[in-house]
Every structure is written in C-alpha cells, then in structure tokens.
Image 1 (cartoon, helix red, strand yellow):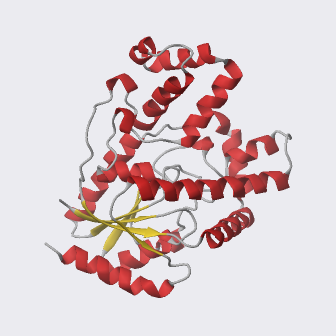
Image 2: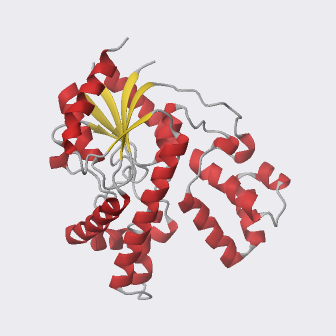
Length: 310
C-alpha cells in the first residue's frame, strides 16, 4: 500500500502550519481534506491557506469547483486518490490535511461509501429537517422520489427519519440509497495519522479569535457575494461562516447576533469533529501543538521513520 501522511483535528489547532512544516522537511505535497475549500472565492470563511502560507508547496483540491457546483464525497475521494498517485509517482510524500472527517475516513477505507455506512453530515440533515418542517412529509417524500424512486417505494411517507437518511446518503455519495453497496471497511493506504487538539477552553478561545480575524479580513463581503449568487440554495452556501449571514442580509438579524452565531456554530462543529475522529478513524496519534509546540520536531522525525519503514 502507498504510504501517506494524514493530519486531522478540529478547526483552529494548527493543521495548516504543521502540514507546511512536514512538507518542507519530507519533500511532500498537500491535499486539502476540507469539503468547503474546493470552492473558488470562498477563502476567508473556509480558512483556506493563502499563497503566502502555502510557502511554495503544491496544494491539491483547492479551488476546483465553482460556488454553484455540487460536490460529493465520492468525487472528492476519486480526485484525492488521483492526487496521491500523482504525488507518489513524482517521488514525493502525499500529505492529506483537513477537518472533514467523513472525507478522510472514506479515503482511508475506514468508512466505505455504502448504505448505512455512508457517514453523516449534520448540515444536510438539518437542511432536510427544516424542509419537512416547512413543507410537510409528503413534499419530503416527493423530493426522495425524484432522486431515488426505488427507495421511496420502500419507505412510508411519514417516516421522515429514514427519508432524510436516504437523501443524506445520496447527497454525500452521489449514489442512490437503493443502489448503495454493503461493504466492510478496509484500509486503502498505509497511513501515519496525526491528530491535533488542545484543551477545550483554549480551543474555543482560538475559534472565537479566528472568527474575529475573519471579520477583519472581509468575511462579511465574502458571505454577501455568496448570498447574492444564491447562497441559501447552493451546497456551498450551507457552510458555517456563511449561512449565518443570510438573516442579517435579509435584515432579519443584527450583526452582533450573526457573529455570535458563527462562533457558537463553529465551537459546536469542532466538538463534533473531535467526536468523529475519535470514534470513526483508527490509530490516530494525538498531539497538542497549541500548548506544546516543541513536539513538532518529534512529529516530523516520527513521520520520517514511518516513511522509511518497509
């Protein structure tokens, strides 16, 4: 199996900085493992590495989609695997970096793209729950029938939970729920997986500070551009840091409430990220570089030893 390095963890713990240091030390190139960083123009709210931060290291799966494009985990896995092959063929080290746990698990093979194992996405689930609350169970069932009539035939109209799950799986994988294979997870790569985290209170302070920094960088204008492009109706428009602005732009909320909502949702998302990584991906080695940055040389040395092993 090809050797890869993977860096995971919640937002605001230093994944980008560590990935650059490892890439520089070990002749690596970086693949973004973030579901939102594929979208062009969404730079600030996704915490996309700037050209300066990329430090001349080649990055993959950044800015590959327009904001009105749809994008499934199956597409990401396919493109990430192509990137791994390209990087490996050039004699370099593939380094996958990101916080979208389901994407990482699907790439590794820990979470196969099939049926009840197709992972979970709270944003998609919330979207359809809001839909059924507004339009009712019949409209929800009809939405499923349009994309997966075979599944709709087997699920009662009033079983909102199963209907939402079927829609969720379809959006995540691009494959109808009724056509999902039943497979068992098996690692596709020999992976050294680095997990970054820090004390909860410190993490939340860093998240709040990051949101404040995004505001000074122009997050409001970036979100407004997305809103004007149809953000509430777009897959790209469901991301944290963007969707919270829509009531404000519609003059239904104020700025203070909007900013606090972004911070709250970001903190909650970080908590969910950690839960996912701890329960869905095996053999992660955890480090706290926020409070113990002196561990970085040890991480790089351990990664180097891993790459040299037969």
